[in-house]
Image (cartoon, rainbow, N blue to C red):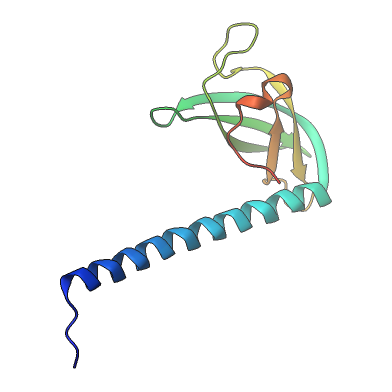
Amino acid sequence: MKKINKNNLFKIMLFVILTGIALMLVVRIYIQYQEDQEIKKYEGITKATIIKFEHINLTAYYIDYKYYVEGKKYIGSTGVERFRCDNGKWGCLGEKFKVSYSKKKPSKSTIHLGKYEKYKRTVEF
């Protein structure tokens, strides 16, 4: 039986780790793509209010927004950069924006931030 030296073992482990990361990335992109397509195909429109602006790490933030469909409350979230509305509120906290959601599954949604759209970090297809 052939003995595996440390250099080959390192290369194999590195390959497995990088392949795993790439596979997870592809799966996440596919899931995001499917959700975006469902929202477009079964689109409903309503208004959402931004309820939270949180710092995640050094440069990343996210906003949570609430919206109602047929009287039921839903919470959505999207990644953003640090930004302020014209009224000075960080992340437009408390402001209303249009949201698209899936009529098939209303918990799937995307918020449209209008002139602040450039601050979104979430990729939409």
